[in-house]
Image 1: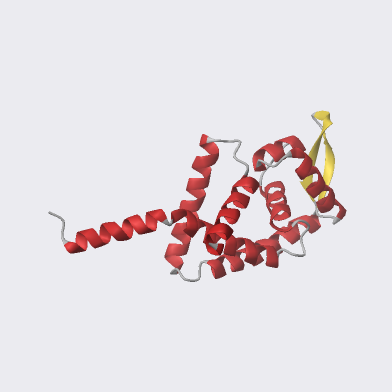
Image 2: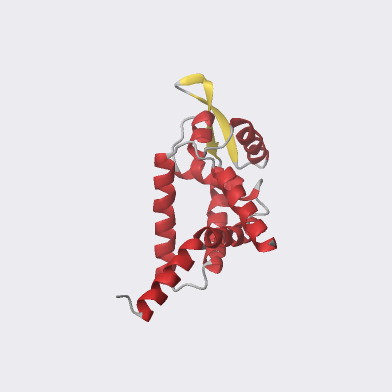
Length: 177
């Protein structure tokens, strides 16, 4: 027979489980607010940051592959790349293996801008998670990355922009209600 403590722990676990979406929404909303603020000098803020990070840290062969990697609609990607290129952060180069294809390559200025942005984002993320001890921050980040990797593996077409937007919309609705 469960004790009062057992029932209390079960109720607490259910309450946390029932609020999981709200909790993720709150963390995501705060992350979005802080990160967009620290990236306001980068074309398209966090979206430009993610594109620049993939271009610098991964070898993505073409613009189409970049769109697939980030699960971003090609038409959206095109205008973000246009603006990143106009800012001197990336260049479109002909792919030497396929002259019809374009590779997206970071400039020296783009690599430096990303390094600076990564430092600011890390500080913003620490600020978002400041309520947790450092070891829990690291565990949270690792768990979130593993969960996201599992989602992308199971459903490669999941558009992160739509997922973020829907979570933020749901969070706004629940905080207004």
